[in-house]
Structures are given as structure tokens and as C-alpha cells.
Image (cartoon, rainbow, N blue to C red):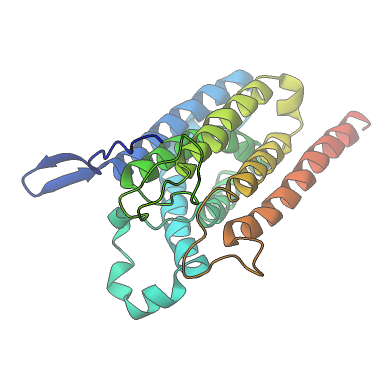
Length: 268
């Protein structure tokens, strides 16, 4: 059994100023993702969105992720709690963000931004999708530091006893997600986005991201402890897995659509 490192969730504390690893994870995800998108935009300098477009898009992305992630968490996971405790809604530093909600929020932000700037929505989505795993990597690592969203009880030698998870060792499922949905998925998209033939098939990278994230998350949910107030729906499937199903279906659609659309353009 591995020992839980018990890292202080507070990274910096100077008087009344308290900065948590959770907040730094979001900051790193936004800044590195923004920089990465600007680099990707340079691959095809004659097309938009370009680097300036991504520079302007950052505030839209931040708003979409934070509002969507929080609203999604409340609606999908803790509606009763926040209905009874509305003062807790704005306390983001305590955690409580839904990736699926954040994905919907940033999707709406991209739709609005692409319409206002008159740029290709699918191309914008492809580059943003290629950068999203950076934020997932840091975000899940921060969940681990917080000792939250831990896994199910296990007798494997890499199990850990989490401070709020009872006396039995559990899967460090946050690290599984950080590695798969963050590291592995980033590398897959890193390769795809550098192939011009793939970039020209707008929507394919978005589809690959949806398929990758949905598939990896669906698998990891078998190791992650279900939310206590929800449990396994029908005794077999978690809320996270249910939310991954439309992502996987959408991913298949975008891959097929992007390939077919490009072929139609070639055929005139």
C-alpha cells in the first residue's frame, strides 16, 4: 500500500491571502492551454482562428469553464445540497466543478465567439480540444492533493488510505484520470494536430478528444468511488459514465462529419 502524501491543499498563505493548489491548477491549465493554442494557430498562418483570435478568446474560455463547470456540478451532482445552502454556490475554492458542465460552458463560449469573430467554429474547437487535456492533467492532480474524488476500496498494493475516505485503501483514481485524460489524451491529440491532413478535416480533432475523454473517463469510473448521494444508477452505472455516453456518440459524429465534409470539398 502506498502512503498518501498529505500535501497541504494551501500552496501559499500570506496573511489573509490564501492560494490553493486547486486554484493554481486552473490557472496553469488556462495559461498553458492558451499558449499552446497560439502555437497551433501558427501551423496554418493563412487561416483563422489565428494567434490574435486565441488571445481574445481566453476570457470567453475562462467564463465558460468556470460558469459551466459550477452550474453543471450543481445540476448533475448536488442540486439538493445547493438548493438548501445557496451561500455555498460561490465558494469555488472548496471544489465542486463538473468537467461535463465545463465542456458545455466552453462549447457555448466557442459558438458565441466564432459567430462574433466570423471564424470557423470547428477549427476553433479542434485547437481548443487539443489543449484541454493540459487543464485536465493539472486539475485531477489538484483533486488528488485535496484528497477528494478518490477511488473505490482496493486490495492492490498501490491503494492509498485517503484522509476522508475511511480506514481502507482506495484506488488513487484522480491520478488515473490525470494520466489518461490528461497525459495520454494530450499525446494522442499532439500527434493528430500536427498532421495537416487531419487539421484540414475540421472537426476530427474535436471528435478524437470527445472519444478519448469519454472512453477514458468511462473506464476510470469503474475505479472511482461513486458519489454517495447518487450511487450507482440501476446498481450498475455511475452518473459520470452516463454523461460520457453522449460525448462518445458526439465524438463518432464529429470524426465522421469532418472526414465526409472534407471529401465533399475535394470533390467540388
